[in-house]
Image 1 (spheres, rainbow, N blue to C red):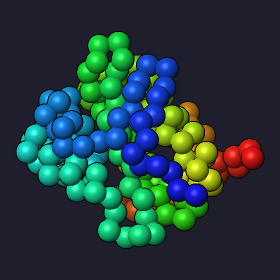
Image 2: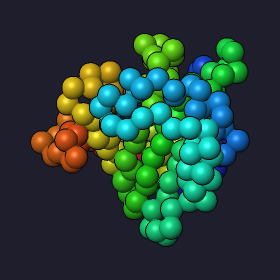
Image 3: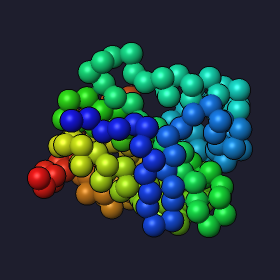
Image 4: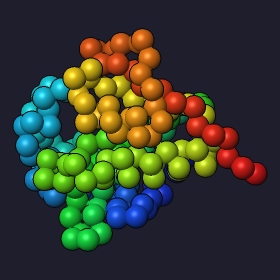
Length: 171
């Protein structure tokens, strides 16, 4: 079984919407703070750049063994997009990432969204989840810990691999 990358997901305060080009303008504004790139490098993407990227992501992975899932986070309280969560799923394993715009940080939204994604992945039979986090990115490390991930000794591109085993879904 594979997780459905087109399924809308929900949490207490968020609607997680499969990301598409229609989200580019609003997410470009929500993610415009250069500080969001302190640990990953680069600079904020323009709406045009995001439109192209989101169209490519919505088309799915060219590798049939891989599934890409990308969701924009809509805060129900005000209807605004605040960030995104994403996953790359290969047989039995998924790599996670999350980004929340600076104005919405510190409210637990990344953890809440990532938990909704973890539930979706576990229900689809994913057994192992990972995330790659820069050693100095304490906020992302806190999200990973809240999700039950623990750091490993593995490094990739100056980031630490965090990992957790998900409980098996009940029949």
